Image 1 (cartoon, one colour):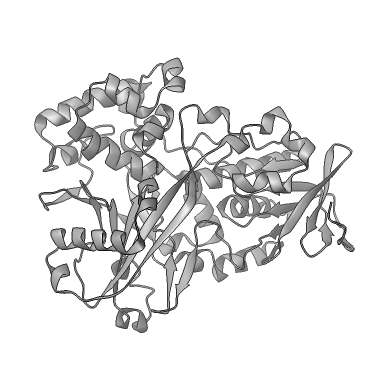
Image 2 (tube, rainbow, N blue to C red; image 1 turned 30 degrees about the horizontal axis):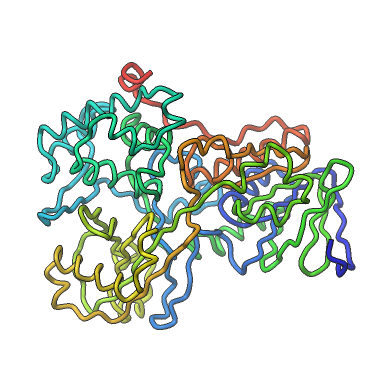
Length: 481
């Protein structure tokens, strides 16, 4: 233990909670506890909230730039509940149709039809110009099989193995399975657990008519998780301390007794929630705790990178708010000027029209320079939208988060710990914990709610914070069980 700590801040209540980490998991836990009128203190080492869902200032344009475009699907019931609770649910736009563009450059509009789930998207898939009628039959058969995969096979094989077993043709792997899953799970198909793949398709596309709908913030992430949210917490007896790093959690007599800050102070509470990325857990917990079998898998979790190319042109290149790109390095284009138009300042457009192109599971880009990647993306945009050729590129930059998500490798569920740690008064929160969901904003919020529930139960409360999933349609329940 470092010898420099000199002061102590004692708890004044036996019903208070200290949360370490101001990402979505920590914020969700704080919101759930605050709703039950529990006194909460949240510590965040950085000068902002949101964790990986963050923005940074681009000094050349003066704009707040999201490190990566974050989207949320209609099936993410807990994330939407969290946003409604803290009063930022009005800062989103919901796309009632998606746009897919393959090598033929035809814009394919993808939207629900009149049929009940799971057939509500059948016509949308049939109309995709880059898939044939025969392709549709092959995919439908495979999707039915995916809903019934044997559990023992699932634990030992990757989704790529399963596709091979199903004899899926390479063009369908590239133009369908990979398009959906790499964007959703941010990993290559050979590094995806079959159960996670099944969840994406069932919850997102088959179970409910609204499960697939994509919503995105209409403000930069630093504003979404900014003053409005902090004001809500302030009104609900939650203290948020930014730029307050924790050195170590203190452990004695089989319980956590305090959090040693980097400043040397110690903050104590009756309950603790550790809501940090999994690779930071080891440095914060006592060594004897990390040796516990329940926590042994944490250090075995792997991560995957996500890259985003930000481009500013002197004129618009497309009116589309977004486009899913097929057969290209770039996977999804977001028209940031269009998406943020309601909250934009006049100076934002003067600095150019901004577009962001996402490259998930960007392992292979490590061998290329930023200039090469940006040039490739610009060339792809020129192939799709001819206006790009006449547009002047004012500014560009590549941003990569090398630890964007935990990798949903086959068998990964065995490595994810529950929210209840081996120490009774310590909960774990983060999308990497056992939530039943992959590495998503929904998974992060679920983990926070579950951790807060455990803390509440220990304090004598019976509140249930976790929100139910969208109820699968009667037909989906009959077909898939």
